[in-house]
Image (cartoon, rainbow, N blue to C red; front, side, top):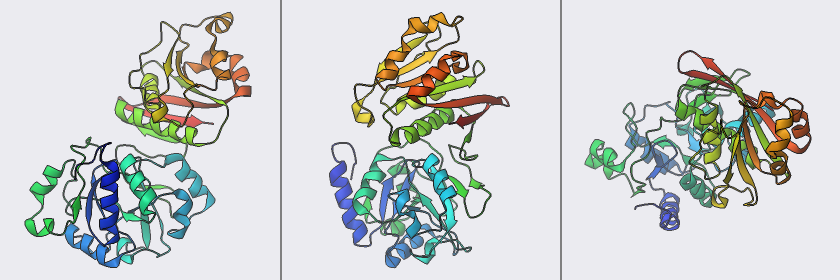
Length: 357
C-alpha cells in the first residue's frame, strides 16, 4: 500500500489489523524501512526472527507510544527519565534493564531491552492506535545494509523471505538517514553503543559533524521546549564565533514551525516569520523572530528594534550573538522562557553544542 497524507488513515487501519493477527509489516520509520510485529506476540516475533536470520541473543528494540508507559517494560529512574525527555522523540534507541514483560527473544543476552520513540508522524499515529509495543528493527537481513526504498528491499530478499511479509507500506524513497543512535542507560555512566545521524553526548551537550546534524539538533531542542506547557514567549540565545553554525541551528528550530526558508538577518537585525499552525501547537498569533545582534553597538538601539513587542505576544525568538544583549538579558528573563545555546568549534568540521537552561 502507498502511504501519503490522503491514504494514511487507510494504511494505518490495515497495518493495525495485520499486526493484531500476528502479521509482519514493512513500514517507513524516521530512519529507514522497518519490520513491525506485535512485541507481545511470540509467534509474530518468531516470524520476524526467521525473516531477519537473527543470531540468538542479538536484541531487537521496540517502539513505544509514550515515555510514561516505559516503566511497564524496563527499569527506569527519575534521572534516566529526564534524559529521555530531552532526546525523545528522536533518532535514538535507549537500552535499559528489562522487566521481561515482552517476548524474551527481543532482549540481549544481558537481559537488556532497547526502546524507541521516533520522530515520525506515521509511526506515532500507528502507535497511538495500536497502543502496545512494536518491534523497531530495520527491514534487512542481519549484517546487511538497511533499506530506504521498497524496491531495494525486494531486490535483496528471496521469494521465500518475501512470503513471510504480510503487508508492505510504501512511502517512496526515504531520506538516507543512518539508523538510530544507540545509548545504554543501565548504570550511572551513559554509554554510546552505535552512533547514527544524531550523536548523543549527554543531556545538555551535543556534537555535530555537519550542517545537517546541526539542524537536526536545533529541531530536537525546540521540540522539547514547545512540548512543555508555558504561557511565556520563548527566547533562544545563540552564542558562538562566526561561521560556527548559528544560522544552521536556527533553520532546524524554524523547521519545527513549518518555516523552510531562513535568511541570515545580519544586515537587517531581524526577520519576522509566520508560524504554520499545522506544524505546531503554538498559536497562530505568535510569530517566529530570527535576530542577529552582530551589528548592534549601543544600548539605545535595542529600544528602536521593538523586540519587546514580540515578547508580549508570546512569540518564539532566536537571537544570534545574544551575548550582546547586556542589560536587556535580565529584562527578557523576567517575562520569557529563556535558554542559551553555546556553539564551539571542535576540529575542522565538528561542533560542540551546549544547552544551558
